[in-house]
Amino acid sequence: MPAPARQRCHAVLTGLVALATTFALSAVVPASAADTWTETGSDRADPLTESQGLASVEVPAGSPNRYTGIGTIPSDVRGRGWNHVGDPDASYDGYYIEPYQRDSGNSKMFRVQAPDGAWSEYVHTLGGGEALNNSWVAISPGGQWMLAGEYGTMSRLLVFPAPGVNPSTSPSVNLPQVSTVNLDRAVRDVQGCDFSGPTTLLCSSDDPDGSLFGVTKPLLQVDLSAEPGGTADVSGHVTALRRLPLRSSCSGAFEAEGIDYDRRTGTLRVIVVSPGFCVLTDSKTYKFTRS
Image 1 (cartoon, rainbow, N blue to C red):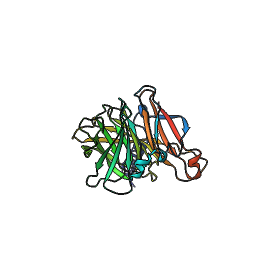
Image 2 (spheres, helix red, strand yellow):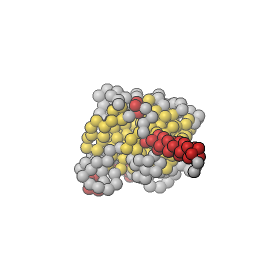
Image 3 (cartoon, rainbow, N blue to C red):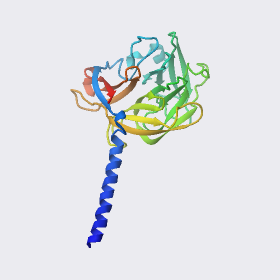
Image 4 (cartoon, one colour):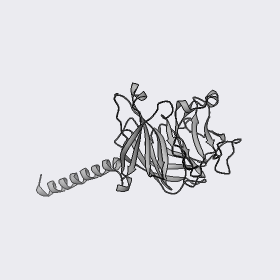
């Protein structure tokens, strides 16, 4: 091959390698130092009462963290078929919301505790193409809107008026989906999301495959084009920040579960359930801080 041709070929190959490297790194490396989350510790997660989700509660002051698991479902709720609870969230003015699903039917349910302690239930009838599962909820910082997610491979998040908080909602009428967050990249098996800012979500993914972002069980960041609310859809830019910790005395399939961001301390917490028998012994709630 003549020298000029070799030089042109080398330049093209160098450019392709650089492009491929940039694309691969962009899928798994934080966009900036502000998006780097460093593990700072962990607590044991009880498999019955702390295995699905968690939420920090700001109001009233001094409230303990809340957790969900198979053992936290009230017997009357389970008796009506709502046999799975997902990752909850708490609003900044003291409302607490848990997402529920059942094995069949055409609806999902959101169970709400008001600041005065009273509970109420809001049922949402599925829309066309909407999945039955109800994995998590995230209340917007303004408190009037709530995001919820479906399991599986999805390119959207669902937006609802926050039940019990938004004055348009009532337990006696259907809770409607009002808009959508359209994601620029598909996500898989998201188990929880929480707002870390007005337009930023942090999400835990139980993705066992790794083909979407080059890593399994990723911690994801979703940057929204605007605060969600009303009937206007918004877009979301998805970035994989890191792999969640997968440490256990047992080998096998881990399960990433719920997530919580405590804005008072800047602490991020994520539940990871251990495989096999070790689900009973060394499942963990991992803690992270931004570095």
